[in-house]
Image (cartoon, rainbow, N blue to C red; front, side):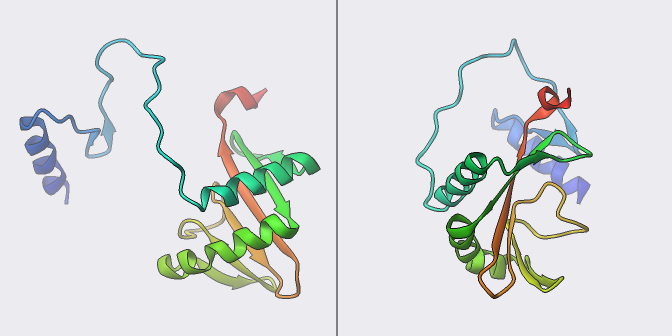
Length: 144
């Protein structure tokens, strides 16, 4: 596997394309940093689910800092959470990230490995209680 990655990077280098890493080690940037941001593209429809959840959570003051990291967690409920939960149905099924635990059905935006640390997810009790958590990695600014 490592040889395959190295071979791919060497081939990319020969075509004047830089590899971001070889064996997991990041390469140092070339030249000074820039403040020019790359242009964006139109967000897909599911981005609205994130925006609505974050807006609802912010309006309700339903956000906190993860105790172990500089992650800001926004928790929405009600209609935005219901829409997000429903919106995750096909995605969670396709990546195997839906699970039943603690009397709820949980749908994650990425596969659940050990616990939900750093993951965005929604859950439902099947009786109308919907909750979603959107996690933002905000860095050291939040540490103080």
